[in-house]
Amino acid sequence: MDLETQILRLLLRLRKLKAGGPTDGDIKATTTGITRMQAEITDIRAEMRQDFAALGDELAALRRHMNDHFTAGRPRCCKDPAQGCPQGASAFDPDPIGS
Image (cartoon, rainbow, N blue to C red):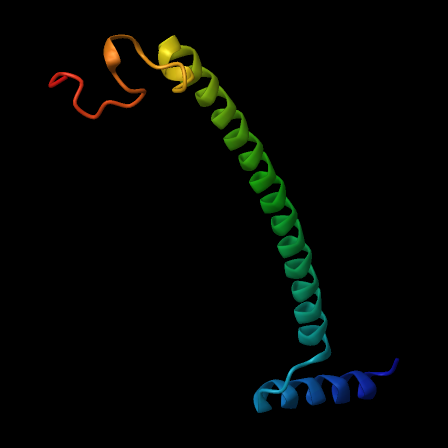
């Protein structure tokens, strides 16, 4: 490549920069940046899906644990309200002291 061609290319590039127009390098950098951002967004979405799925599993396990805990802690008479509780108390007595 001769010197005159290099000078003409530099002048064209300088005019584009002064005019505010994008150069070929700017366009390539922009498209590369957009591609990277799209890949990062895709990765973040996948991670969020996995995190929400794990959270749902944790909540289901907590519900089962709490249900088992409260079921084991209830008195026998309150497990089956049809059997009735001793001393005439109902399965749910809002005022146990007043009875």
